[in-house]
Image (cartoon, rainbow, N blue to C red; front, top):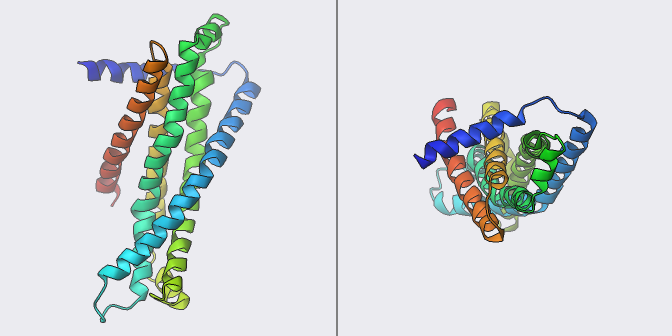
Length: 245
């Protein structure tokens, strides 16, 4: 029963968010601020994770392909496909659920506890639209860009790791990188990234906006938001894979 009440409150929160903005210029400034906050603020951790993710993928793939009948260029194909299909969209979004999601939940929770949201509502401002919608739209706009950057850096990291350890040459890696490439895989990864971006922005916004209590409840709401977001990301990953692949 608690699940249905929370799900209904989540839908009501989303419904109240899609109202006509009172001041388009004000919303635009907040949208750009959130784009910079989410995109630039998360770029460093995304870059570090992506490079090492591609490097580890190359090393572990080479460790498992022990047959001399398999050409070394196959390593690059496997790294490319695993990075595009799964590692970059899913693992990076799980990390972003912790980085971005906890920030959104704690920020809105602090505003709710300190009665800033109540003050805005007294002034006649639709707080759902003003506080949540720019964060949601910014995440949907920026996170797919971060996923594309993650793909490029992961493949580059795998190439550097493969050539630096002597597993395969740069020419062999580039050859495998271009072999049997399916553009549909990129479309699938972007479809997942847009879905995950909606999840890891709307769920923490819901928990932060509806928090009740004090500082302890803010911490609990942030933790719950990250956990629920990660579970829903994995569940959506399975659903999209079953439907689109």
